[in-house]
Amino acid sequence: MRIALLSLLFALLGAGCVSMPKSLEAPNVSSVTPNIVRDGAGAGVGEQVRWGGSVLEVKPAVTETCITILSHPLDASARPILTDATFGRFLACGQGFYDPAVYAKDRSVTVLGHVEGTVDGVVDGAPYRFPRLRIESLHLWPIVVYTGPPYYYWGAPYWWYGPGWGPYWYGPTWGPYWYGPGPYWW
Image 1 (cartoon, rainbow, N blue to C red):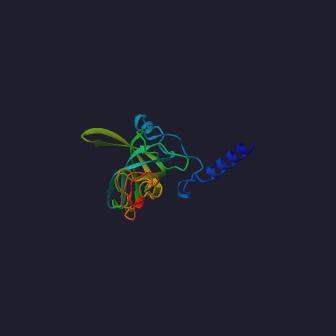
Image 2: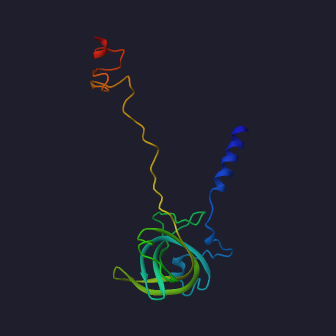
Image 3: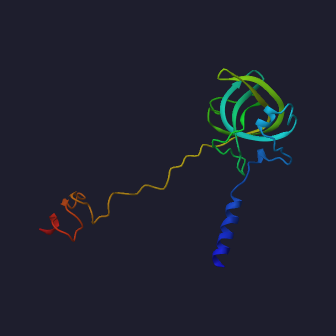
């Protein structure tokens, strides 16, 4: 009983930690994906969608900037899940200037916008049909760096240093202090 209550408490606390950025919240977001828009003739045009992925290229122009994004599935907080699963590439275009140094290659972004249709382009010499999305909101996700636990290991425990040298205050030792010979035995 106690374990069940604790697990329920941790589940509720953990569920509260997942939240979507306010700029990406929308009441009626379509579930259409970039590959459906690319393959279907006019499928999803005009619908509001939330797509995300990795930035491949940023092309600023005079009045708008278009960002080529490799689409990935989104988690509960609308953050792209960087796996091998992909829905293809899409263009996210918005008014103004999006700095290519900020929206650099391989950064994770999520876009809320309306599907405008498709644009024919080229990927490594092969023709490709890009779904085009008009940006309403663009969220650049922070880079997450895993550092691991603190590193406090200073070597073997004080009583064992194996054949060779121990810490500088003991000199040469051959095993635990209760085994012989060592300089502290003489």
